[in-house]
Image (cartoon, rainbow, N blue to C red):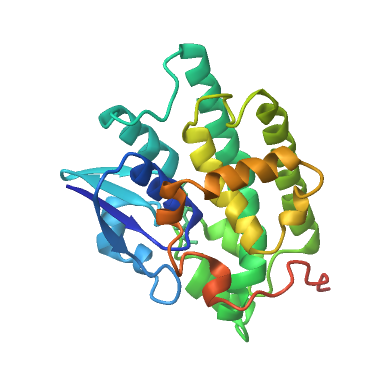
Length: 255
Ligand SMILES: N[C@@H](CCC(=O)N[C@@H](CS)C(=O)NCC(=O)O)C(=O)O
């Protein structure tokens, strides 16, 4: 039996949930509160995921971490529904997309997500308290939280994120010239991994990054949304705007 430790609104969890749904694999859905209760930072969870992040997959007692790695593991272990091309060069292209998606837009999307949704949690907290109770307890995100601080990321960081997401859309648009999916005719893990990032930007009201400018991205997003696996993944409560009042991403830099 597969178990997935995840959070409803976490984009990395959503990547794996789409993959599981496409493959029609049943799994035990273990929801962690990664907000107030910080269940992903408790000693028992850190034993299976020392990075203190979601998602984590447990397959028959074996632990697999990191959303892209989990997706590739599922693809190799459960190949009945194929989400990658057979051709080696095409597979390499898919993996190059996956690395790019992790390095650029996955990291970029965190900046407006925090500035727009999560900051009210830290309201009234001074920097020292914030660093002690929020930043320093996070195994791989300490510096990220410290850079953000209780007041949020600087406008310059938010603008850089938007630029990176725009660049991602430009690359997607160029790739989509050759077919409905990023690799052409083959729907693959590359589409699955970028989908929650585009969905998050849409949820944050930022679809203007691609609307008008990259119509192929708009059409691709509509095709993604039409897939049953996508609808299964984005159940009620899995989008930030459903449970957090969103504030502007650009805050006006503080002195
Ligand atoms: N490389 C990891 C990153 C996972 C990740 O950053 N997860 C976020 C939610 S999308 C998280 O758990 N954040 C916890 C925190 O901010 O403390 C993966 O792809 O699984």
